[in-house]
Image 1 (cartoon, each protein chain N blue to C red):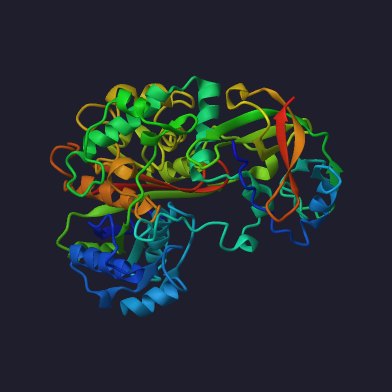
Image 2 (cartoon, chains in turn purple, blue):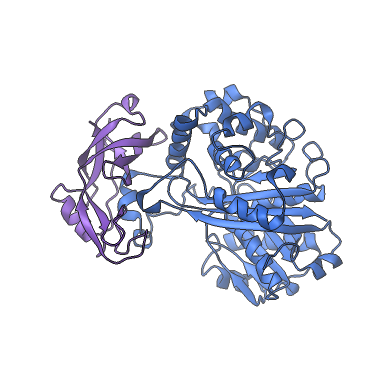
Length: 128
Length: 388
């Protein structure tokens, strides 16, 4: 099966550290030093308490499938999913490199990187 | 301050087109504006408030006010996707209650079929979407994002594809009496299940249609409503909310209706059991099921049982819904169904729905809009109205 072309992120000053780390194979999330909450997508201002004291944290890359759907009405069908990271936040992603019928809610997954079209490698997950 | 009883629906109009290859977008807006003003018996010269959303061409309100030749003193272009027009009715009622205007015109139009079915999205201007970096690579579109809500709902509550199919079946029973509906054939649960899976667990027939068209509503002050020769439909209560991705605390099992519904019911002073007819936004069958739970028509998780066995069919079940055929069968102009939800609820309250689907003694009705995506961020808006 042909691989789906992956839209590249339009990197901006706020997201550049995320993609710089991605180039080294690290998935970053944000931690708020004021309220202690972790969040994703990463923001400069904490979405929970509005403190501007947020810092980057490297996620373990382990998680489990919260929900998913196989997009069949597409030239190259693919699996979209929300993965609950070991650290807590849920991330929108794709489940790749496995048979669609093996994808189930609750299954453990691990981080992999896939090259986007004309941009950086982006974080995705495969069955652990 | 409550807006309850301080504004009325004066006029409504649904464009009959479903494929507008021969019309421009501003032309469609003007045709629905004229239709709703004619229905009310008002002139465009009396319009002093104008409301439109992201479907309006050019600079939105500025461009359309010029095109329509109106001179509003109150302008609002709140954009919450397909729910915008339910919110516009609420905001029009607020503006009228505050004395800012007396005749408020709300228009919607779109021609996605004539334009080749392309939805405007992140592709055109990625820099305008704060989530683009973390969503665009993953191919999330309306279809598979809503599908993930259905998948999780099935996992947590045991909801089945058969139960979801009943929602399409009910819509199709109503659409058979609507000569403008795109899909006029009654379908069975089995036919829904036999249609191809487009994004697990949703089948093709779990999805709404894509259509051109539009609609308009005229909201008026009580003084003007008394002068009109139309049945009086009073706005009792409204509520709005925008549920989102919540910093990663994503929960796909509920919608913003959980917040907007109770606000509207409290303002209206009625309960779900008082609602005789409900227009429920139906981009997909799962949208209806989750919204009914969140509005309190049944317990969370019990939506599957609630919609089964024809409970949403007028004359058959306890809660007649979308008696025009809804987005699932009738139309979804410009990929935005909030306007037609308001219009069919007003028809029911006036006693002007098709006789085969008209709800008897329909004195209180609800219209609910959902815009954006249940799977990421969406605007919810609830409107409760009463026949006077």
